[in-house]
Image 1 (cartoon, helix red, strand yellow):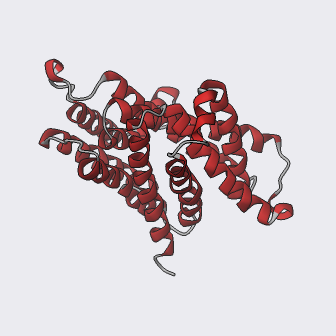
Image 2 (cartoon, rainbow, N blue to C red):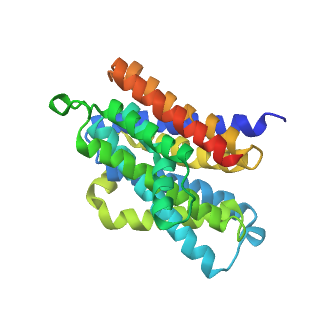
Image 3 (cartoon, rainbow, N blue to C red):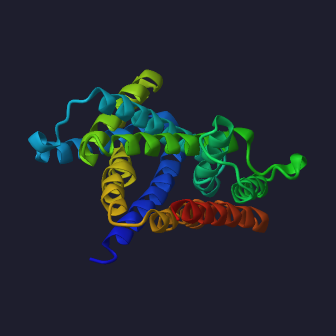
Length: 289
């Protein structure tokens, strides 16, 4: 029981990493990233709704603040999934997954500008470390041979910021309602948001396609089971430990991309990836302390 929380968080990160690989497979088959993102969240919503309905009376909460923050959380999830898949499409799984994990540092930078966080040399050092890592990872140090497109890098960073929005929204609702209630509302709003932007004809054709199994697997691993594991695990794990264990996602995504999808990572890109993940881990531990 001692390591149950760590194990659940690690499983969540593992499933998130695998979901990036599944999405890459579907995009290679010609499916639109937004449609893929929608099915990932929609299948997750069904899982959360079932979890919510098991004990409906105990889980139901009527609160305007809950709906507002859950809506923002759903917006964050929609942006995170969609930009993440767009980044994979424009670059690679390894680059996209690593850029997502640079989000805490950029949120810290915004906090400086808004006066929310106190500026220190350590925090600025972390920001510099991540920026250097991104330059190495994307190949921006050599403009003539940039290894990652601007769209790929921008989408990866946008996915990270949207991820931070979801976590912020979820934390705001933690004292108002139970996790299954928040996740159900958030993912319901997620589905409504993507319905406005996706190709509905292509989304409808998924049901009759041979790839339906891939979409269901993506939703179960990448949203349903993984988010449930993460929510339960994070409550039994210290934040610093959880932040380090969750790093299994970009590692898993990178291995998936290199071994199964034929992605190629040069030594400079690998060093950039290590620098980003190490810096974010150190910052997370320090912030937790």
